[in-house]
Amino acid sequence: MKKPLIFITNDDGVWAKGLQSIVEVARRIGRVVVIAPETPQSGKAHSITMFSPLYLNEIKKEGDLAVYSCSGTPVDCVKMAFDHLLADDLPDLTISGINHGSNSAISVLYSGTMGAAIEASFYGSPSIGLSLLDHDLDADFTAAAEFSEQIIRKVLASDIALPLCLNVNIPNLKRDEIRGIRVCRQNRGYWKETFVCRQDPRGKNYYWLTGDFYNVEPDSTDTDEWALAHGYISVVPIQVDLTDHRQIGELAQLF
Amino acid sequence: MKKPLIFITNDDGVWAKGLQSIVEVARRIGRVVVIAPETPQSGKAHSITMFSPLYLNEIKKEGDLAVYSCSGTPVDCVKMAFDHLLADDLPDLTISGINHGSNSAISVLYSGTMGAAIEASFYGSPSIGLSLLDHDLDADFTAAAEFSEQIIRKVLASDIALPLCLNVNIPNLKRDEIRGIRVCRQNRGYWKETFVCRQDPRGKNYYWLTGDFYNVEPDSTDTDEWALAHGYISVVPIQVDLTDHRQIGELAQLF
Image 1 (cartoon, rainbow over the protein chains, first blue to last red):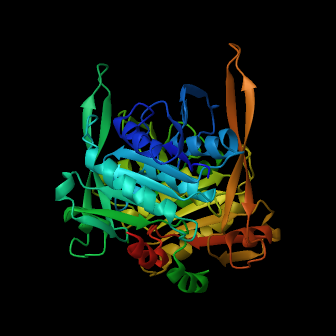
Image 2: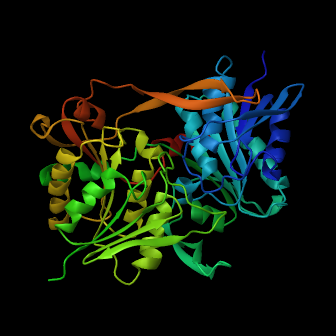
Image 3: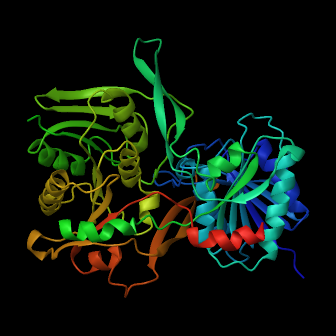
């Protein structure tokens, strides 16, 4: 039987430690192709590159592993894989990550990691976005990689209906402190920003965007935020119908 | 009674004709503050700027109109408005657009126009993303502006529950060819890309991302694509819970 083809991308860039850690895991399971952004793309959400062309650079080919960088966004990387490089041998699974930092709750919408995972699901590939709650460039991915391998193997062995796109967040704990995996819904909550104002050497103000997340339902035990705060890995299945079906009736009367 | 404060942004940039056309409309209704991107931001989705600071430049102040440009994304512009410039006098309504080109169906996810409209709704502002189905820089916004004014006035006069975020798309037709306004759901369908490969002067390949939209349910009469194809303005109410609630049970058994 042919080994499964696993496509990997991320938003921290092709040299990120989190990417390397999941490539090692994936190589134990199947053939691996990486197309990851040349540069960090955190916060790039579902953006695509429209006003400049894209470069694709081969970095490494050895055995069942091929690694490329792409000059675009995480979603560009996925499109480059499914509509160009791997169009004749489509991936059996897409992994985005392991991200350095959380993508729980509404961060799913700002996240380049999840943008890529969502895009892959449009091509009929099961996809998993993986994030560790540690922004450190040198974060310890040991436990995250171990649990990620469990999740990847279960998804590959399952016959769950497609599209399947999972937003997986992993608390920054040691292996034996992690209490297990919880399937959750996306927490309601929002980011509020504080703009840090500074003056450039020419006397002009500039602003750094810095934010805090407000969990408006800390006591709801079925959300990803609750799971993470209580030592669990959170798994949220993702869909992309943004229609607020409950409002359709009332609005139809308004217009 | 104090005139309503209308905040306007877009993704085509502060100098776009579509923005100018809706500013004229909004000035007939209330006080207007514009913070729009310095440069075109099409396809920027819900992205935020994390690795560089933001500049905010005053372009014009006259009477009840103030116009600023911001060096960031459409979502950055919204955050700059609600958490900085207008934090003490929050907008009664946010408008994003009028975009040059469609943002119907799954394009809502790639769209900077809709990224901004969605972000504004997080701050409790009713918000309307407006798009005309014409990419031309010099598109004719006459009919679009007239119908947009109707929609804006109805939203301001209504007591519909918040959050309210509308994705409004307007067919590229003359005023008397437009058959009316339909409240719809987001069409299912996807973009498939064709990468146009060229060689740069140094002999290296580069790729332009070009795509086509595939409507997988052309006969469903309750979608935005159907409405637009049949001469109607489409209005889709937007929510941002990406959880696929139907998959939670099955996945809970898997993990």
